[in-house]
Image (cartoon, rainbow, N blue to C red):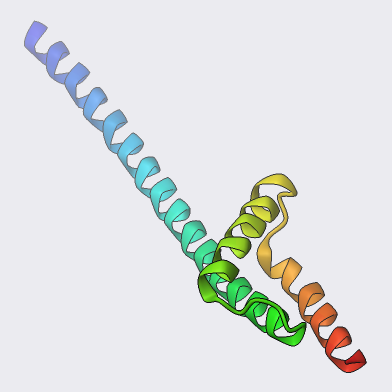
Length: 102
């Protein structure tokens, strides 16, 4: 009888660990997807920043633009909690408006 109770306890622990493993895998997948989206958005922002700097006759060095964009991206994502795709139309609009006035 004691061995059956021990077996039942081990089975409960195994089932709990399997559930926890499933939850952790789901969370890892979600986090990986989120990171991938942020990386894609960051790349798009870098490209936009290079275009904006070119339009204003500023620095077009990709490394400089990338560093500036990384800071802006971190600020947007972590400080204001807005997603980068939300910010893109406003930046595109500002770029278009400024290009028309030149």
